[in-house]
Image (cartoon, rainbow, N blue to C red; front, side):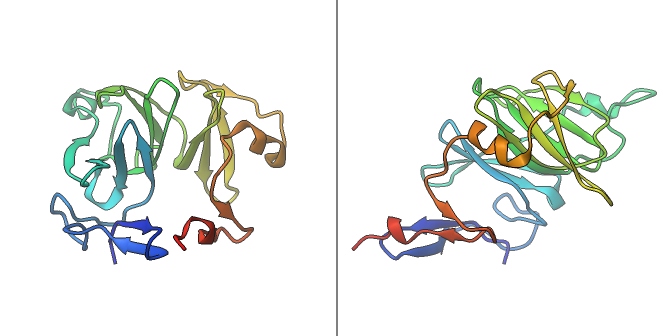
Length: 193
C-alpha cells in the first residue's frame, strides 16, 4: 500500500503514520521503496522509484530533505553516473556517514552526516542490501544469478571475507526484537498489558 507504519505497543500492531503514503511522486508518497534506516533522530527511506532518499524527523515524521548525488555526477565526457540514481538500501557507520546502494549505476554512494554527497564506489553491479558491523566493515549483497556478499572498507576497497555467515552475526549489534528463521518479527514482548 506504499505506507510507512510504526509499531504501537499499546495497540500491539503496526499502525500507518498519518498524512503519509500512497503511491506517487509527492513529497510524502512512495514508489517502489526499499530500505529504511534510523540515525541521529531521523528516519531515512530509500524511495527507489522516485530516485530519492527521503529524510524525515522521527518526531512527527516531518520531511526534512532529500539526499541525492550532485548534478555534477551526471555531467562531463565520462560522468560517474550514467543513469538516474536508484537508492535501494542504506546503512550508517559510527561517524554517521551514510552508505547507499545504487543498483542502477552499480555503485555505492557515501554521504556526510549532514547529507552532502562525498564520493561513490563503482564496480558493484546490482548492489542491493547493505549492512555495517560494529567494526565499521561494510557488507553489500550484489544480486545476480549467483548473489554474493561483498565486504569493503569505509573507502570502498574490497576486503576478503574470511568468516562464514554464522560467524559474522556476532559482529553486529544484538537485535532487541526476536526474528525467526523466516524473517518474521515477534513483538509480543513489547506489547502493553
